[in-house]
Length: 211
Image 1 (tube, rainbow, N blue to C red):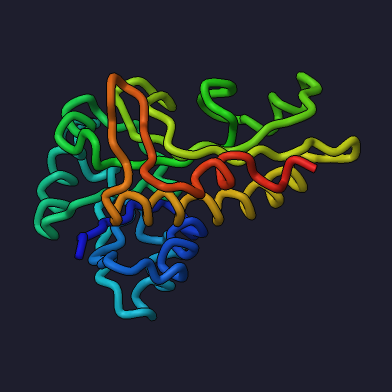
Image 2 (image 1 turned 90 degrees about the vertical axis):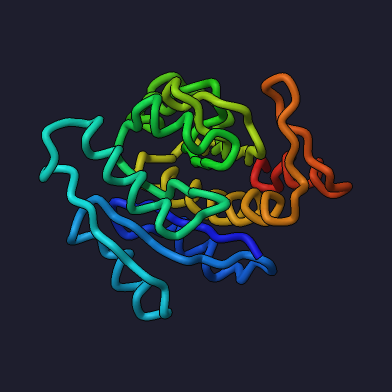
C-alpha cells in the first residue's frame, strides 16, 4: 500500500478522477489545499479522506510556505505527492525533497506551451494537435521526465472553453493511469527518461482522442 497526498487549489477534478479510479494499493491519505474555499476539500471530506488547508497568504514568502507544507505533508508519511491543479510555483528545496515521487499534469504536449494560457496560445498558433502530459516534477517549471501524454485534435470551431473541456476528459484518463503505474512500481527513471514496465503502455501514449 502506498500513501498518496494530493494538493489542490480549486475543485480538484483530477483529484476526483484519481480517487474515483479506486487504484489497488493506493491509499489517498490526505487532500491539502492552499485555499480554504477550494471546492475539492468538501468533495474529499464527504468520502472520508483527511483534508487540510495551508493558506499561502499567511506566510512571509514562498520558502516559509513550502517549509510549512513539507512539515504538513510529511505527517502523512507519503510515498507519492500528486499536484492536481495546485496553483503554486514550488521552491527547488520542496521539489528536491520529493524528487521521483512528485507528479504533475499540464494541459499541453510538453515541452510545448509551458506556463499559463496554454489553450489560448495553441489556438492562436493554429496547431492541429495538442494534448496533456503527466510528468515528474523538477525545479524547472513544467519540465521534468514525461510519464504519459494524450493527444487531442484541435477542431476548427474550438474555443478555449471547448478545448479545455475536452482536454479535461483526457486528463482524467491519463492521470489515474500514471498514478496506477507508480503504485505498481512500473515506473523507472533512467538518465532523465521514464521507462514504463507495462505492455499496454504504448496504447495509452497514443490516445484515441487524436481523431
